[in-house]
Image (cartoon, rainbow, N blue to C red; front, side):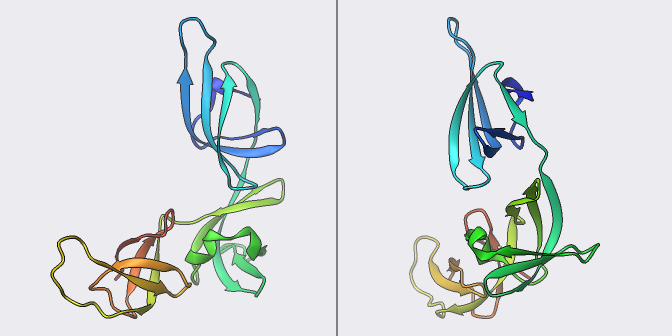
Length: 186
């Protein structure tokens, strides 16, 4: 058990049968009222971001999450296969549990698999992934006053906005948190 006052971003806990990770905390103490701890959390089973208010001193059950470093191996049709690079142990994860992550999975991409008591909860992707642009219109120089962008489709099927100088066949760095263009990859 952990006291609500001690929860910090990155802590994992269970409440009402759900597993949460703390994203942000706010301690609110007024003169006449009891302290209130406001937590911005992510439900690891549903992926929903919620705000939870706990009173100061309230106890919640902290848990230990298992994290294993693996790399993307191949697409099995209805599942994705990952492999531990040290033990060569493979893990197959259903595609319906990986919705947004599928846009960033390329061969040998290192990821962190998150599990709790054998239950798969999700994967942590690197901050940026290098993806090849498979389709884009040629850039046309014109009189632009702001940063001009065009549509590009990456090798995973992800549609992103890229600067006009990016050509088909080039690799670009894409941020995994919001799916936006970061820079040209070498």
